[in-house]
Image (tube, rainbow, N blue to C red; front, side):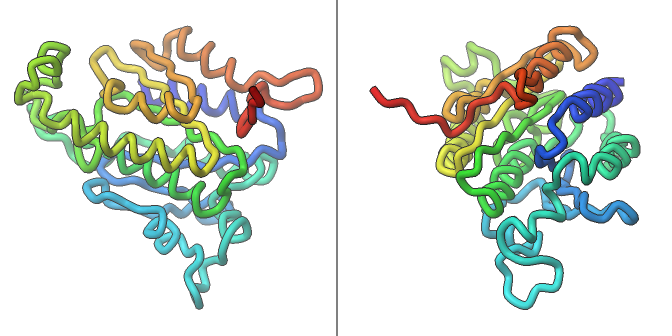
Length: 264
């Protein structure tokens, strides 16, 4: 139900975007998948392990950027056209991927949390933009319905008997908060990469329980991104806030200002 609500909101906002806006799609669970939108006849995605930290160089290599004699693509913007396309050119492809998108097929044992490699997904998204659109005013939008439970950036383990850290745990540096400092260090590094690349990172989190925003918030704070918290993707506060991000001005441009400079 939550996934269907999110897919519906995504498809609505895609229809609101300017036709020349570049879009891409990354999904994650146990693995992180970068979807190729340039081939509408045969959907394809490139998988990254959710338990391993991924650098921008590794993203470029696996996706075929900046690799000599690689027949899959080329450097820079030309190679990225398999993954980042104007919405008018890939609307059918991205909507088809969203229509077919299902819950993570990896089984979840009784008493376990689903495996979510949120940290890896965020790093791959930033790495993709670093490789193809450096300093070109991009936005990464993270949608999450639960805490990161595997890989770099994890804030709690998969065993349900292990509670996620509370405010008291953080203050006293209890055992339940043992993931916090490594996660904050990891997300701070991602934030610095995003700032250097000239992109903003938005976090849209919907869950009745904690999602690990305490550790992740530095990414939005440093990049000037937005943070939206709600209990469910079906609630009005999420839907209205998400649509607000895609409002157009009288000239048909998004109400977003990126890479601006302020003279004091």
